[in-house]
Amino acid sequence: MYTVNDYCRDLFGEKLYKIALNGGMTCPNRDGSLGTGGCIFCSEGGSGDFAPPGDMDIDRQIDEAKKRISGKYHGSRYIAYFQAYTNTYAPVSRLEPLFTHVISRQDTAVLAIATRPDCLGNDMLDLLCRLSRIKPVWVELGLQTIHKRTSDYIRRGYELDIYDKAVKDLISAGIHVITHVILGLPGESSDDMLETVKYVIAQYEKHAIRFPQPNRTAAGGIKLQLLHVLEGTDLADDYRNGLFEVLSLEEYTEIVCRCIKIIPNNTVIHRITGDGPKRLLIAPLWSADKKNVLNTLNKAIRNGNTQNQ
Ligand code: SF4
Image (cartoon, rainbow, N blue to C red; front, side, top):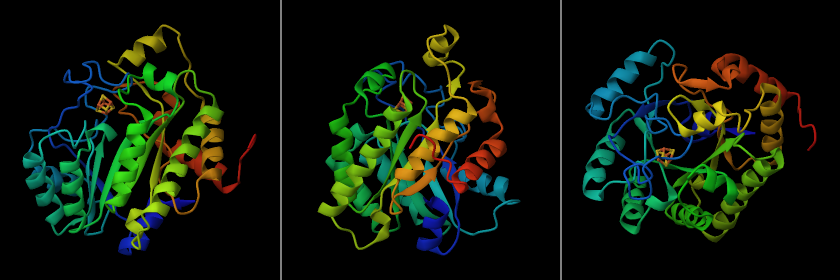
């Protein structure tokens, strides 16, 4: 299991802390271009509930975050992570000065950008390529699932071949691609979830071979995220109406262990769970105890708990 901390130590000689930023973006799935309701699980904060308000000056966002974590992190460099909404969904003329400013700061080691694969036109890819010549750029794609019935249900708003193309384009541009996968989506079996993870790995292997990168920054990564039901989402309505159940900690642990068993060591595991904001979290409530969740997962992974594999 090759974790993001291992990856950062290989690249930078130290573990890096991530600072969540808000560039004041929106999302085509919310502003009416594709839809207005957003993905069914997405909170009002655009899946960036830990990021500061979007109208706050970006240097202030970074400096305040640094102060907040100064008690637990003593390194000098950070991952500047544009998390909320769709961070390539704005004109290059607006994004270039913003991203260039952030990546050029001395304390930025990596520029990380969360986005949708259907918001990566050629002008944006050119920008990312230019930025990656300054410092490593990571782009996180919200795939969540490869299964059409689920992607329709969650209103993801793009087809799988759009994701495939984005992976190919980003890898060819020397960008480290991170795919965000949600475990526990309604109607999916653990085998369905495993299929999604296998698919992601296959895409990385296919395109990394076609576009071999001497630099390890081109390796692919994956984030495994537990499905959270958050207040104010349409998913919450379905949950309250009894249309689906959330995973138990035991079920989630077993699925994560199965995923980890098939993720090769050249794929960086950026996350094995995720913590929804407690003030919005409806279910599963066990996920609010992040320390216990991580301890349980890490213990099971160490013990090689891969039942049913
Ligand atoms: S693409 Fe991201 S920001 Fe947009 S609605 Fe879906 S989860 Fe939310």
